[in-house]
Structures are given as structure tokens and as C-alpha cells.
Length: 253
Image 1 (cartoon, rainbow, N blue to C red):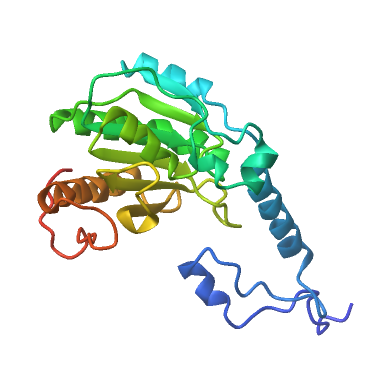
Image 2: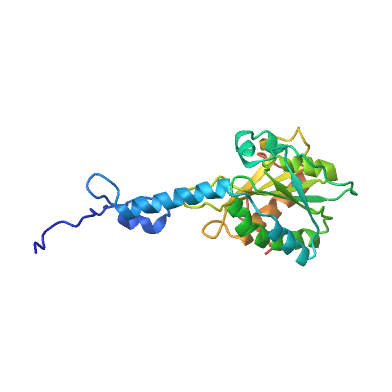
């Protein structure tokens, strides 16, 4: 046997950099192509990302979990009445098809929206709500029922907050899946949200919440900081900066 025969996969000199990132770098090559393993890994990641977008969210498990924890919830629906329409018509995902029942005014509205990743909500929403809801109550906020909205975009929270006359609106939403994180969840916070008036510039976003990304505890710390600052300043959005990593002195957790 010729021991000097080169291996079937040529290594990449950047291979040492793989320890610093989950990105697909330094995969090597087989002839002029990717190695078979790297090619199959890519196909699997792509399939998982597609499934996360197309598989409908099942709110029944989350609804039962909230009930067991003593928190009321409410299922709602956007104007996009099926998955295909939801993906093709983002505008319909921002509008409620069902209006919540009449309610007394509250301080905070928490909304869970499927967004573009049902897996993000299935994997992370319950665990984060277990931290968020008691933290808000401990600070004296009166909460609306947690609204579970199917086929919903971020701006659906504005209509919910306006209905309840809530000054705080927190939306948990499945983020557009990536090839390394098909189940990433985002949080959008809006102060004094108004349906049809609030824009993305009025919101603060905390993204990349998943097991290999931002932890639930750090995400909550950032959100509580933003809420406190919004209460002090009277606004949220692009003018409100997250300073939790630069000596903000936050001691919530």
C-alpha cells in the first residue's frame, strides 16, 4: 500500500479557527468539492431551517404550562388564516383577526407569536416566561393574559397592547432561522405601543436566544434594564440603548 497517497479530504489551514465559531469555515475539500460529511451536514441544517418555518406552532403545550403555573392565557389569530398566506403576506400577520374580550386596563401585555420559527417558541418560550412573568409581577406590574397569537408578526403586539391600554408590550417571536440556529427566539419591547402608529424604530430587540446563543437569564436582565430605562425616559426604541454590558449597575439577577 502506498502510504504516501494523499488523504481523500484535503484539510484547510484555517481549521484551528473552528474552535471560535459555529460558522461553516475550514471544511476542507474533496477534489474541487466539499467533503461528503460537510455537504450532508449543510443539507440537514437547511432542512431543519425549512421545517422550522413551515411546521405550524402548537400552542397547546405552552397554554397548559401557563395554566399549571397559574397564569391565564388567550389564543388569538392574525388575519393570515393559513401558513402560505402568512409567509406571502407579512402585512396580514401584523393585524388581529380576533379581538381579545373586554378587560380592565393593565400595565403590561406579553405576547407570544410564532413568527418564522415554530421551534423557537416550542423550545424556549415556556422557560423564558417562567422567568419573565414573576419578575414583572414582583415589580408591581398588572399583567394581561398571555396572548398566544398564531401566524403573527412582531407588530401584532401593538394591537394587543392598545386593546389592554398597556404601557409595556413584550413580544416573544420565532426569528428567521439560520443554518446553525433554526430555533432562535427574539424579544421585542415597545413602550406605549399604539396600533398602526408604532414602528420598528419604537422597539428594542433582544435576539439570538437559544441554547447556543443568549441565555434566558441574560436576556431577562437586558429586558428589565430596557423596561426601567423606558419608564424613566418615557420612550423605547432606537434612542434607548442597552447598556447592561458597560457598567449599568443592574442588580436584578
